[in-house]
Length: 234
Image (cartoon, rainbow, N blue to C red; front, side):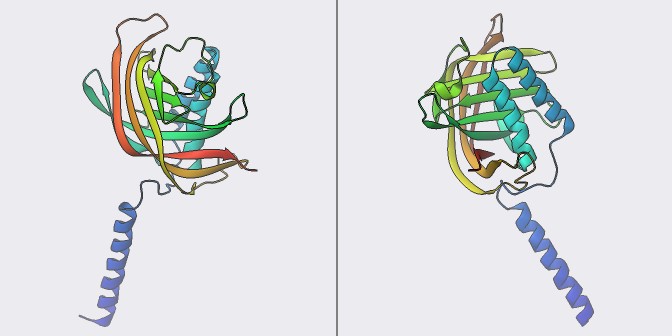
């Protein structure tokens, strides 16, 4: 084997090793692509509908998802079971520090899960604690002001139908935080963003909104879902 050939072989082997290490790296490794326009448009449309329904918390959750994707978080692939059928969704969890009326700081966390780059369905669940119980949305009080409560909505974008969670539970637990987000000023230079890992357990009964009807049972049970924690830069 000539010296030149051996050097080429060693370089090729080193490049292959680096690529393999990248593929096996942490799930929160940065990505260079931005969220697809159709996904961002769908999330923005959902935010607009939530505002018209008088649900500013829900609108902020959808826009928080857009912001997190612009910061560079890579979605996780999860299984979502709906009426005993299992589907593959992409998902992130966004945690945002909020102040309650009494001045206490809470971490409002929101799961966003959707069906691919051109979403046909979106699941959104929010809570201000590791474990929350679903109840009828009622007056739509802010999640931050409702300790122990959870809110959830599943939207069928193709048929323009929505179901809201009326019973069951949501467990959105922060498993750990990591590095600064890959694009730290892309979404908002005034916001600090760190990558995070979340453990997610959703077990809810959802009914058609606003008229009620046959319930959907929606479940997901995943460890290490990618996400972020956002806070203001002091």
